[in-house]
Length: 378
Image (cartoon, rainbow, N blue to C red; front, side):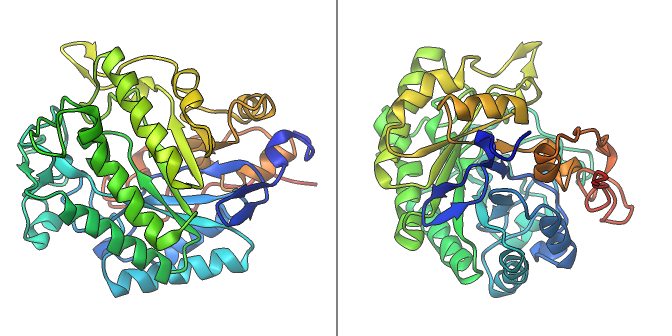
């Protein structure tokens, strides 16, 4: 693809200028034993420094009993130092990097070592369990459990604020709020996981309040360098509303978020891979995410995510339907993805599925992580 293509035009995002419009999506890789970012992670992110913007793997704002162990955090000084080591290297190489801030809500598990260390219940909007779940590192491979309704959601809003302050100290260029995939922001938005009767539940305005208050807290710390990721089709982690309610909910949420001066909003399209089935019925609300929600976003850059190829991305950007693209899985297997696209090289590295998550296999953590080859260039 020519360097004059739309994907290789610079773009202003918040206070920084990205050199291209191929951004790297957050990708959970679980290479942080003890929740501390490390030199292996630095190698991984440096390999992908040519992305217009790197968004880190989901980074926990507090200890959570997540489905996989070894996820990094941003709640203490040792984590801040580990991320600063990574960020300094990315910046020295000319790259840009956001931290994706993550709270998993009801899909944590009380028996996970991280949750036991946290010393708190599994908090969620309401005491409604998600169906499914496979905690492979716990005896018996248990599924999701009924969470505890957080007594005051402002507690978690403040945890997001502190994590943003830590991200700033660590030298990140900005932060992305993980509002997708059935995690806590999504749980508050979705009426199937939120049956609160206070100011945080019931009406669309109340269900949207949590995510909007978190965004406002992040903006207080990072100014224009705050972004939002949403997956309105739902499906993953047992969320999804009837179509009319779904559109009305996200219309309000996105219109209000659009007023906050964010750097970008990522719209995650429907993906069959994320559409969990119960009794052979998919959980997602299937509809065209870009066509439905792009018109509600007037002032903020829009990125498209989920199955976007460079070729499709070129068409989406050149037509003005989106401002940039966010690529996930292909960035796992192609550290030189941007260079490949610029030089017309295929994205042909096969994925090492066994080692996508460290802990699933006991082999060396670099396998399936930093050992994917670059293409040959003349």
